[in-house]
Image 1 (tube, rainbow, N blue to C red):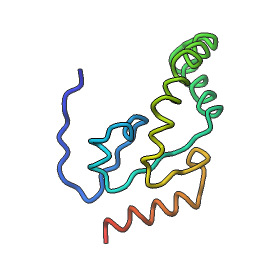
Image 2 (cartoon, helix red, strand yellow):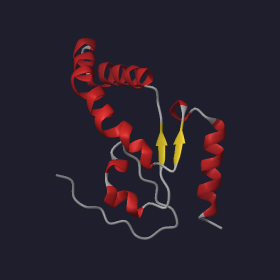
Image 3 (cartoon, helix red, strand yellow):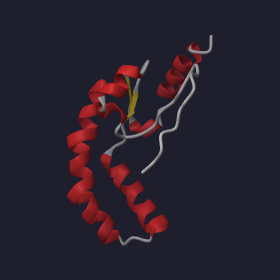
Length: 111
C-alpha cells in the first residue's frame, strides 16, 4: 500500500491520472480540470506497444485484457467522467491551439 505524500501549498499543482475526474471529492478541490481525449484505437496501439515491448506480454494477452476489462471499464468509468472537465483536449493532446490555451490558463496563476 502506498503511503500518503503531503503536498505543501503551491500556486499550481498538476495532477495526472485517468481516474481523477471520477472522484467528486477531488473535483471539488480543483480550480480547473482537463480531459485529454485520445481515440480508443490510439490507446490500444499504445497499450500493445508498451505491454509487448516493456512488459514482455504477448499480443494475444494484451488484446484479450483490452476486450475483457480495459475497454469496458473505460466506457463505464473514464468516458463519462469527461463531462466534469472544464477543458477537453481532442486528438490525444496533439492539438497546438489547445496546448497554447492551457499554457495561458496556467500562466494566470503566476501573475
